[in-house]
Amino acid sequence: MMQQQAMAAGGPAAEARQCFGCNFEAVSAETACPRCGKKAFFTAGNIKTRGIILVALGLFIAGLIGAVSVVVGLIVLNAANDPSKSRKLAEDGHILLAAAGLFAVLILFGFHMIVSGGWMIAFGKRNRATVWVMWALLALILMAGGFISMWT
Image (cartoon, rainbow, N blue to C red; front, side):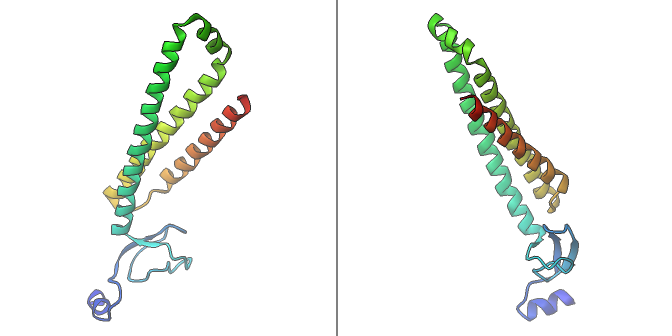
């Protein structure tokens, strides 16, 4: 009844919503969270759309960095066969190791985006644990980038 009244009045229909600010969940027609007041009170459909975008971005990042890793690996492998270049590679091994670590964390970040987006698509909700894991992976990416910039 309330949904029909909201639609007749031209307002949004009452739907299951989740606040990205305080994680409050309710069936409501409001666009602002009743608990914290933020305008981050999203419907399940909106969250599923965000999940699709997250999966697409995760596939792009994991695929791109994976391809770059393969190309860099082939270049290093070819350079290792040349005696003059292999000496230089041995001297700069720590940079190669740091770059490989950065690539690994970036690929893991892409896979995590795929998992997190899949969760959003499947359940129409955001999982706070996946958000915290994503922040931790971002911190690892920044640290790995910092180590590489220190060594070069």
